[in-house]
Length: 141
Image 1 (cartoon, rainbow, N blue to C red):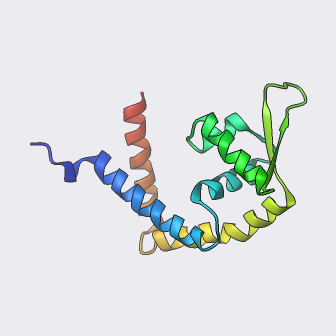
Image 2: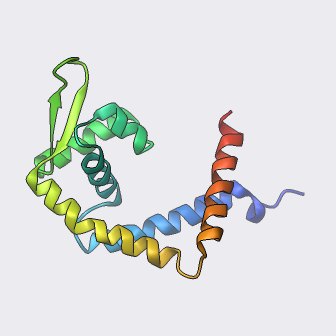
């Protein structure tokens, strides 16, 4: 007999929501959203990332990313430019203000990770990640 409380989809969705809500609460103290923090992370990591690549990394559609980037540009956190070799490609880079904010917020991500994985051994964490990857692979073949 099916039991929703044992359903992996329900369990992971509930856990994901609780983890996201907890991270959002920490970021709210710094007047930033989790989605904007993730964008800052990837834009700063990849330097001149394309809008399409950013959407893929953030598991979001390009139109949602375009709206996010509009807000980030208004806040002077990033700039969008056309690729010099292919004008169809939009490249994104952080402004000095965006770089500064990213630098200030990266420790929040590290602290959150450490709090979330407290009392979990590196081996357990590796198993957890491997199991999740296998589940995703099973469902996306």
